[in-house]
Length: 259
View 1 (cartoon, rainbow, N blue to C red):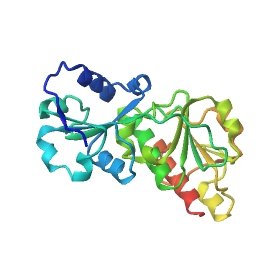
View 2: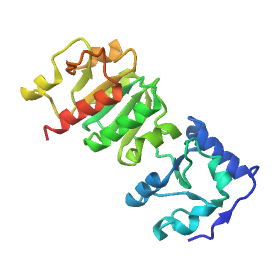
View 3: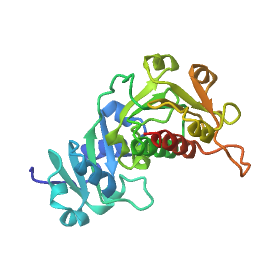
């Protein structure tokens, strides 16, 4: 284990780079690194034995860290609490975080249970969908162009560690989905049978790829045209539509219940 490095100057060049990584939603693409902030995410790294480049800790928290955490990474950096707080976009800043290498973008696995994100733009929604994907056994997520950056700080925080369990491809075009060899299912607010009816009939295929669309516009016509099946979610309360992350959880759970 290396000796922790103490950085006390706000103008330190390494700290400036880390600040950009923690606050710029697209900086990870330039740096090839990702910032994971908070105890939950660091604990996920430990549990999954995920390689860590640098562990970063507020001075007041260092002595309290579990021994397994203090040995994380090739480098450990300790910051005064005020400097650590300057990295955070959280209302209540955490006191520990980690820098990990951005995984290489994998090729599409044609046979995996998959979630397709079509221009889902809210970072909180994207992170929540990744959590549902990981929970319900959809190990591959394909993000079409116009979707929020999958490894941006806000999406990573909302994902709560789900990123570490998923095969993530982003920046894709609809034509790239031709590589899939599982049925493509799509949600719609106005066409197709109700999901619960399809499940009751035993007609919901699995594995499959679920297409989830833009918060306001829904799934794009080009993606709908590729879908083998379109379903609706019953809403007896009369609301016009569901939040896309809520719809994703319902659909993925319905698929998982068939296992």
